[in-house]
Image 1 (spheres, rainbow, N blue to C red):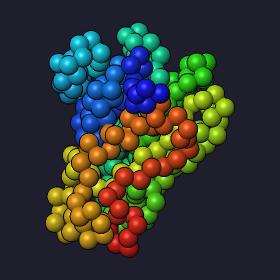
Image 2: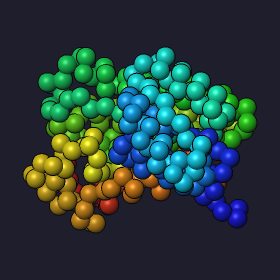
Image 3: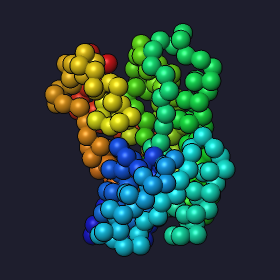
Image 4: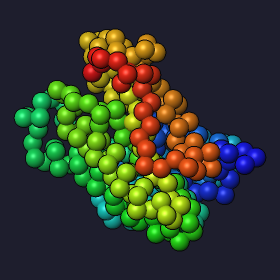
Length: 259
């Protein structure tokens, strides 16, 4: 491999890529040569990211609005990708929701069902839509953005953590099923990252202090800290990695403490 991170000729779909971790990932994939599909619920926000990509790589990105909770939206996302760039070689399932903070006893059925639908079922749907083409070509990379929350309990984001643990097992199952077809399926599990999604955690001084107290690197993550691993897992550099959950948390999970 002359350049193991080269993604020239590859097409990537990244959900939840108008901001935060997804935005950092889609920009990084584009820098490494991939044609990218920027997707989130709001089209205008996606188009802004496409504009940044086109400044350096004209015509190598499109924006497709999609609500991950709606299967028909995901079908359109895949259809638009096929029409613009051809079948997806890379799928990054990044979009997620967390509509409830507090103890498990307080969550409504509707909130729990929405969390599961968006964080697990939508990933299952989308994989099912793109993986047949990967199997036919005997090549593909799928990455699910999970969370270190899937490895620990929490009194405030318990339901979210349940779904993130489910994502880790989903990846293990899919890796077993599609490994013989040279389709790799992995998770990345970020710790606390400075995004709008996690703002409620890192903007709370008490929660931030608790997180940093148990983090050897002494800071929370930035979206760009996650993007490099997504590129590795999507590229030839990661061609023998599958079924894994890669923790990216500044060392927080190797200590006793944190949030």
